Length: 341
Image (cartoon, rainbow, N blue to C red; front, side, top):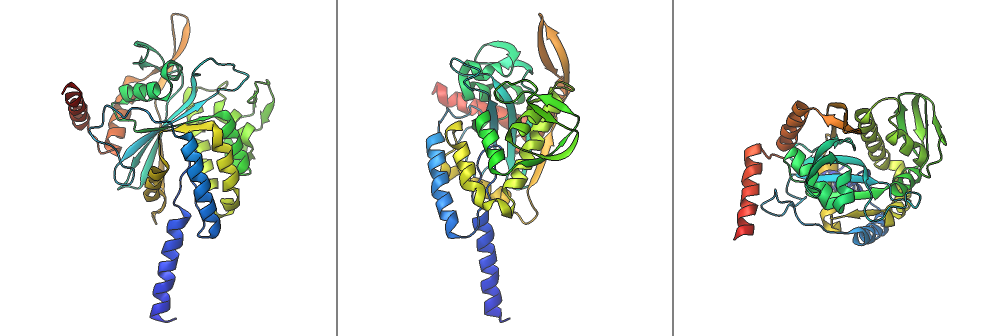
């Protein structure tokens, strides 16, 4: 093979790699696109999805300047909600799942932290200490973001809110995902039909309804294990979505997301994820665990977070964002000073 031909082949290979991984959809979705005319169609469809889903919120008070996903470390809070007709909620519903993801551009790494929905924390929007899932009911995504910021003293730059319909449809669009069921379980489905989902112990491929039941159940363990299962599901979806065989399924996936997602991420910012999925070393995805214990306060169940675990997690996230405690305080003071001026 001639030198010219080898150079052309290398350039062509690099171009394919860039085009394959130029798009990431939501908390539970990384899209690898093939270098074909089909990619252009998907690009336009994805742009339309994000345009319809865009719902901005006020920037984090812990940032002194706007964050650019192309250049900076940043964070995203994934909010899972159940706002089905069966629930008949008025206004915002309580969040059912919370996962905070921090992105470090130099390490090409993502840390995933599941926050138990019954965690006993201070909710600024309500001015009281209560369950963290009450934040979304009090003020939607922004109130939830502020609560997480208060808990860990890190900026929450973006949010992605999805309901269970989108979750189920995404998994089904990928022809299911593989999970390791820790024990035999019987759980209600998304329509609250008790015992409708029956899974045996062991590694298996589950559909959307089964994946939802797997991620939500906690009858035989606790909120911590529930959070670990949610992280496992997210990893499984990422793995399946980035496989070569999933290329033809992306249109269905985006249609599933469609009307069931809101986010303050603009489509142009999505390209910032390229740096996290195009590394030759592979994506470094690490899960973080919060420790705590069951607690009953005034007759109500809460999950009491361990103070040492919260402190250690806070330092870990700040370090991953290259934002030490002193830097975080300085940024907060800078923003406050601007407001006063």
